[in-house]
Image 1: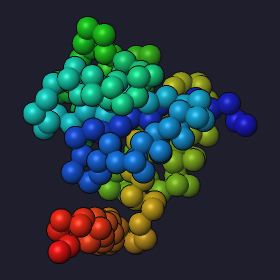
Image 2: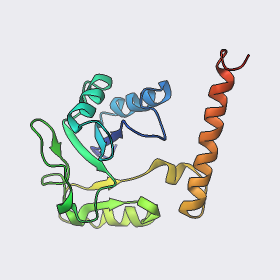
Image 3: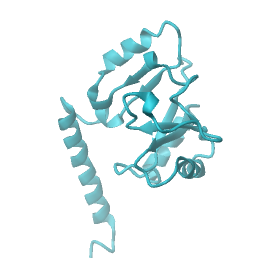
Length: 171
């Protein structure tokens, strides 16, 4: 309705979720059904190259864009090791990145009202890079420790359920 175009960056090397689980594939397909984009969110601590991770994502999401964002980027973007690669562009350079329109909820840095106000204050209509962490808003909690604790408890329940459904494990 609002004609907003977004790109959702997917971390394929996460210890918190498996991109290949049916539920996560459904989420990705819902994003694509809404005519939004998918691209790679790369972890510098991953043992694979950006190019290899991009190929894996491209296998799962053939329409993924040739863009990369970085998990836990340094506070000074200039120190970021990821530069534009052959066919993959870094989102930390223009036309994607403008310091004044980079908005993050990392460690609950900005609440939803503050995020909305920052978006509304974009008078120059520059592209906005909005970094959000779904577990910040899906788990209940008053601070990051409480949110993480609730997230970990949920993860334990999911793993427990998986073991109980495994016929070989549950003899």
